[in-house]
Length: 182
Image 1 (spheres, rainbow, N blue to C red):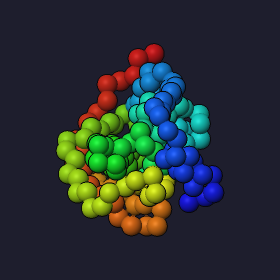
Image 2 (image 1 turned 90 degrees about the horizontal axis):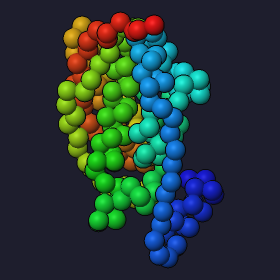
Image 3 (image 1 turned 180 degrees about the horizontal axis):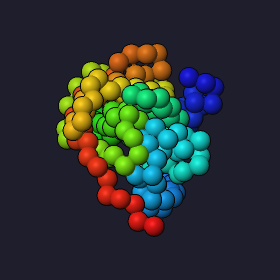
């Protein structure tokens, strides 16, 4: 953890009273207009390069840095108190969102222009709690098998020290996208 991250974690815990959070996002229709015109890997790399805005969910849970290669995606998320459940650790739904993003985007990175996907299922195993002390979580998604109609991917959430926090497998349905309108 960098000194800035450590200071942020300490400040977040030490602040008395109510906390608040505000965030902004870009119109998701901007990315939707690119569907079918670029391969999945081109679309992801355009978001990474800042040519296209990231989807709103990335701002919602504060996912940060992403990398993408064919069949493999990583995404990072610094842990904040706003991710917490009543037990004082990151909510399973937040971890599941991170896992679903990495697994789904890994599948997306293998698709040509005009082909889309959707998650059919997500099977998650939570192995240990994540807290602000866990630092930046790194989620790695990898395609295990891709066919013509379905794909199987896995994703792993690791803490700053490389300990496995959660693991998931995801089946995705692959389909033709409707032709883009002019």
